[in-house]
Image (cartoon, rainbow, N blue to C red):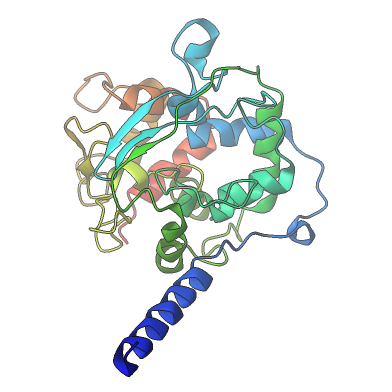
Length: 295
């Protein structure tokens, strides 16, 4: 082997080693979890704020309220087809065997219990903003919902997105090591609205356009984006685009599903509005106030 080829091979191996190290999972450890007695009432609020039933629920009978989280929804994206998983408390088909730490690592770090990277079609870049106590409350609420044995197929992704380890590099760019918007002023309405919109509500996951790396574009927050199912476009909800709406208009829309022109909510927003209607009135007001505040 020539000297040039030898150094080329060593450089390649070194580069691959660096990439392997940089893409490694970075889970939280059990010591990060606070001592906390779960609050099921708060867990239910977070369940509706996050719209868990809208993506993971099934549309029949009690399931119309999103209480049987058997998954199965197909999301068509530029990376391929994502099959929304079963997150019911079933021991094998769902997440019933997960510990509190497993759940927190999924939501905060985008990691499975066995240390694999989750794809950011699961909006953990938003959920990482949630407080640990809120995550533990949400886990407790999910644990007492009905189990489902439905098995969901694996994702169908294009190259290079099948290379799951590479998501670790993506996280280096777009996932913070620690939350940057934790709720430090719980009694402040605007802070509460920001927390709900950017954290559990993950509004940007649908309403913010993506960059070529499929990350939310920080330069265009909430300015509208192609729909996740590939059909049509999700409208913008930035303060500028809501200029003709008052805080009270938004608040009433969230509660009753009727806009200022007396049109009724439609399309995929129906499920979102139904979830918002189940929030405490103060939380709906907080969301409306935050959306109307220029940034």
